[in-house]
Image (tube, rainbow, N blue to C red; front, side):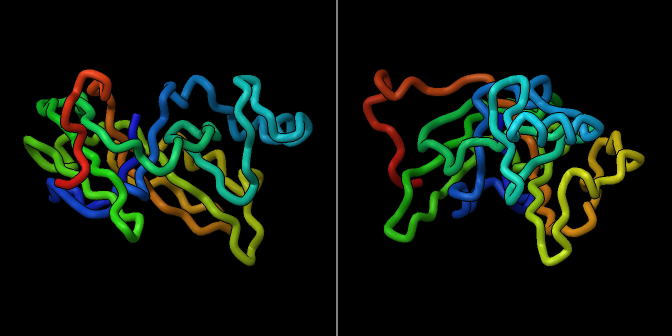
Amino acid sequence: FIAALGDPKSSSGQNAQSWGLWRKDPGPRGVWLRDFKKLESSGGVAPAGWTFDAKDWWLEEHGLIMEAPEFPMTPGRYVVTGGRKVTTILTVGAPDAQGNQAWKIDDGQLYDVTHLPCRSARYNPNAGAGSPETANPQDFPVTPGAEMPKVQGTDKQDYAVLFVIGVEDSKIASNAPSEL
């Protein structure tokens, strides 16, 4: 799964360094908001083995606290889909001198490869010192395609979710992308 930022109408951009990759489905590995106290009492270690970061945490559309994806994206070619009509190649370039990574979707736009029922957002406490404890469980589940709810005392960034159904084997590819 990829957590992506960008204009839904775009088919390319220069910000893939702000995208993340979950190598395992984060949903089943998540912790329900109602179980946040248990997560805290375990030292922030979830039953699935990932560690909660109180300064940078993620929620999904059902009210599960998720592990963070890996940042930045590994350069390469990914087969992506939103589970609707379009399945295509997403190419993520190597970082340039400033650390920016280009991305390009071969067919369609970012919206076309976004799985609309999946929602995810990244939350960072601000001066209000928010946490999963300040999230309102009544805000979940989130309607497909809607924004993730605000959480009191945090800044929020919504991400599109793309399904990854294949990755090019860099050992086989003789010309891994360095520029787009």
